[in-house]
Length: 280
Image (cartoon, rainbow, N blue to C red):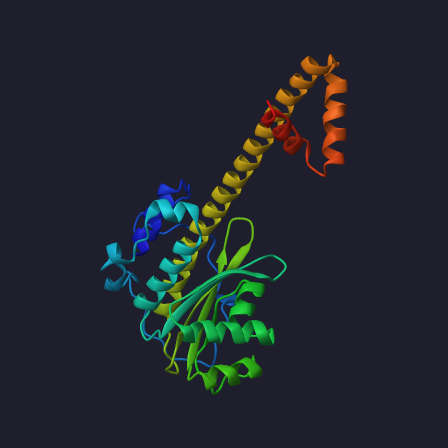
């Protein structure tokens, strides 16, 4: 399913150097010094290929319609959380948040209500691993919410939801940090270095897809604006020509009259032109 995300990014015109082994976009890795861990945990050795079988099974079930994906970010976010929840061992659920540069949450996805509640508590309290992962651009792991003291208010709220551990990492785009992806577990010490590596891969792919889709959506919106502007100019030109012919006005005088009539009728020049042409 990581491969499914990658193939989707290629269809969207993403151009990025990929690892010849894993097919994962190569990005400046997050240095070990930037990884924030909870209390020491004895970790299993990192596998040579961290892609679990869950990543390649059922990809057709989770894959979104690509045409719809091109039109909306939500399918990408939903797919990413589904892959994270199903591929990372002991995960009770996963979520992703897109966050604007001013800290405003713009889009979210979660695999279940528990994840949504845990995330909402972070935004309400203004503290938590997801927010710090985004603001500091670091991977954060909480091994045991009963022992970690970094976000006491949120930890209390999370314990009330019967959560035991958390793993969160930023979505690092080419120009800025787009948000964060996280997985929750009801077990303490649920996540290890393999889980970190897998979540980092998903974050890289998701960031690549989201950034490409955001550029696509912006381009489509710009295209629509240009199209609307050209249509307005065409309407105004036609109405201007009609006034020139009807009242023997100069082109400039005809335009001035059209604007004055629009102001009197509390319309835009294009709306006034449309009304004038409709009378013919």
